[in-house]
Length: 136
Image (cartoon, rainbow, N blue to C red; front, side, top):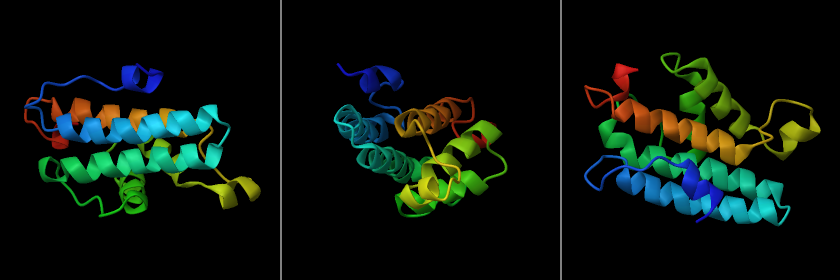
């Protein structure tokens, strides 16, 4: 098993995040392979797509509108003031790419770690007593 697989929470098949975790895990494993090969840009894209795939898959179970593609998902997470600052910051870092790096703006130096942090937050929120991130 990869380090990425070990970093994601485990949930039972009936949990609303089960399929989302499977799909996000596949993206994160591709990102891990890219990072090991030294392809930071590809790893960053895989981190973004992991969050996007995860959020789009759990969208029916969460309150709020988080968009229909990975970048919109990340922008929505970053802008959602009801989320913890740390989660919003992770989304902001993931939004930064090659242009951000060149312009010395904020970008993620650990895109897979940031993606995992966002995913773990939403899984924990969906385990809350009410079953929705509104229980944050």
